[in-house]
Amino acid sequence: MTPTRRIEGSFDVTRSVKWALVLPDGVPTSAGLPLVVFLHGQGETGERLEALLPALSGAPFARLFIDGPWPVEVRGEAPPRIGASWYSYVGDDPVFRQDLLLRASWLETLVRHAAAGAPIDLASVGVFGYSQGGYLASVAALRHRAFWKALCVTSSRIKSEMLGDELHNLAQYPVLVIHGRADKAVSCERQLESADRLRAHGANVACEIHEGGHGIRRTAGPLVVDFFTRWLTPRE
Image (tube, rainbow, N blue to C red; front, side, top):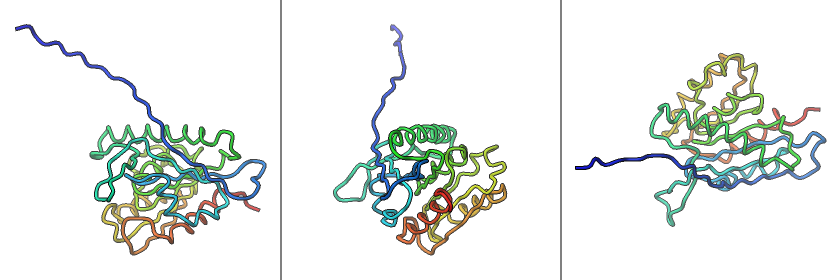
């Protein structure tokens, strides 16, 4: 019998992702507006995340909402819908870690693209991450603090174990953690352990712990606005 020949290869596929840049009322400074990038949770979208944070409407900084690059089916809702994901995850293995680092690099490129032509100060950029978006936000921000000037995560965990030299001398880097003590999806205790590790390396970490579970409470919006206003907007 003639042996079967097998030829394998790969083919690059690209797709577009949606983003929306929201500018505050008023005239920006000559240097441009501070910017906060918002990263949604798995199966969500930037638009749905924006709806969960109505307090942002009065914020003095620009807001960039981005959809994750991978479409995912969201089950348990009627009618069913397609949401978005930032990366594929089947366990904390090398493939996941590599994908997370690639998304972090891709994210910065997308921010520069979205800000081009807008009155944005790219020297004053922060990032907010909810749930899955928080994993990406924390790795991106702490690996490249020269670009990301402040970090806020909610219902997520800062993956400090993925960071080596990046954790040295965090020099009062501002971090806000918002987490529910009853969160069954992401352990509050493990998040607090990560926060303590950042503090041990010099970061300025504030933790707002509530008694709820996984999700974004309405009280989170004002906390987010106050945090980024303090650390990103010009001081008198």
